[in-house]
Length: 438
Image (cartoon, rainbow, N blue to C red; front, side, top):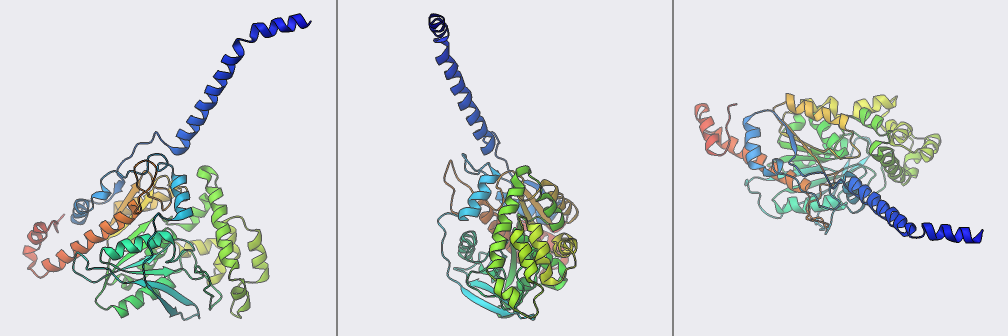
């Protein structure tokens, strides 16, 4: 028996190393395949896909904003993964973050709340020669102290913009609530108060409105709520928003692109913000929040559960559907008449592809709207770089400023041309890089 076993081992012995080598190669090949797929390394870089109407303004913008028409190149090794772009933004915001110096303003609201924003003066003259203030609304639960906001503000200041950054109600650490409510998905009260303050304090200034993620919903809703809100506004830029809360939350329950996992992480962050204000939300007589609501909050694992148990009650909405319908900019954005740039990324794991039909349709119908859809960038990432390390400024930072600068110069030329007779206006604009007729 022993002799037979030894004979068998002798027979198969030479084949075993080859077998193990084959398994190793297969394992390595599998790992490499997973890496290539996860990092999306086979994907090619491309310019943003642009949706627009053929107008004099769009012609001018494509000449003045080369970033809208040239390819966006993310870092080679990881930048083509929307998940890694999103994770890096979420973890560190930006690299080599500056610390701009600003002044915090406190604005009492009619319901007893105290809105706050930080004001940063320009660090030089704007190239258009005008006084221009960039009013900025950050993403969910964010404020002026976040790294991505600091980076963008510093860059904007150096380009000649005064910057006002809203601190979402309840988002600042160690800042107590003075009324039993926090920021919500589409409440524009605090942003309106900040814009009103800027208009009164700087009567000569013109405004560039910028909204990032949730902030994009708020600023587009604010502009569309009332035509007077668009007075002295040169343009608006919205980046990575979802346009319709009702449709977005339905997709947030799906597992594709790990969206359900992102939902859980965002819900956990919202829980922490809300619970940090537990005493304020429960202790005031006018509060709509009770112990039972907080108990449901503890058990919540999604944003929808938090919105239903807590957020919708800040403004007395009877149902979750009503809350989402009333607070979404999709019902207001078509009333925005100032130049509007909407930016999204195809590999944004938080914004489902079906939601992008909204800005696409809008851009095809409204001459003031341009929709730029990048192939890569994730959610609020848009990092640029060669192979591994990203640059301090992102594609997003640069394209917002480039578009804003172009609009500022366009309006400057228009105001000069309007001093001429109507017959000469076309030739005036053409000589200055644009045209008035279609």
